Length: 128
Image: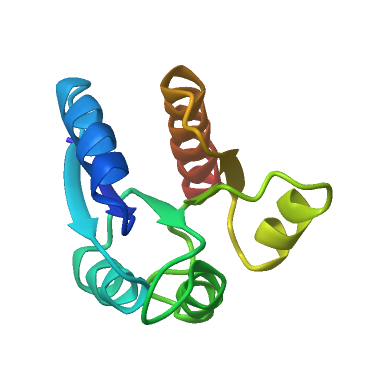
């Protein structure tokens, strides 16, 4: 079963996303701040990380850079979840180490497509 680490501090969003992802057959682990997200990513080694960029304790930008700098988590796909939808925000997210960007409010169908694409890309890289 594909494991997703959802790092999100807003209860309504993590509740909505975790329930919908579980119904789609994913195993979902939650973290509610950036430091907890980094710690869980290092211990669990999930298949995909959905990372809010505006988090308490450690923001998503810092968490993404830290995960990319650790050999144990460097290859885990990270999809940024952010309310920032301004010009240039996508580039900033990618430069921070995320593999993809999903603006809020969440379009669940599009997010599922991004998760599938991230898993496919990871699997292709593992085969190479």
